[in-house]
Length: 194
Image 1: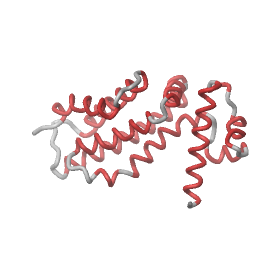
Image 2: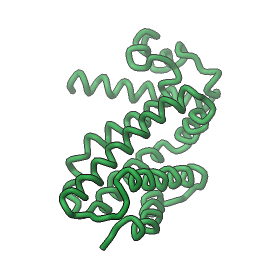
Image 3: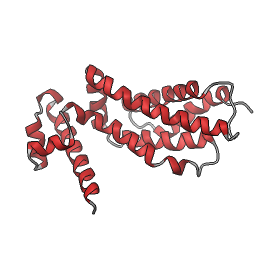
Image 4: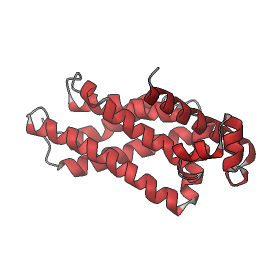
């Protein structure tokens, strides 16, 4: 295993154990020292991975962007823009929801913190930027036509993405990918031109 893989694995371990502690004791009651002790690392090692406790809650969003970027080339295997969007955003939703109760906790803590909202907004803007690039590429190569500009389309799709995410967090036993595809289908006719 490479050094970068070991570092990524340790960061993931710190994240998961911290989130478990937050779930058990409440976010405010958990200290960085407690997280470090649970992970079997020094407090200083914790700070090599996360600048502060709040950053743990941002890690999932950041890892989502990394996942999206790392899979951009695979999107070209899909024949249509809609399939590309369904594939990557459906996968991102599923990755979010694989964390279950921990994800609910992270969302609630994000909502309560101005710092976290501001920082997470940057990740959301970055995700939307990548979506705009995919849409513009499809428009420029002639595989997709719309009367709407790429920014408006991306913004609308992001709205559906987050609506689906919130619905899935609030309700149990929801097929997230299917819900996202259904919501995307509702607006797709208004976005695309035949």
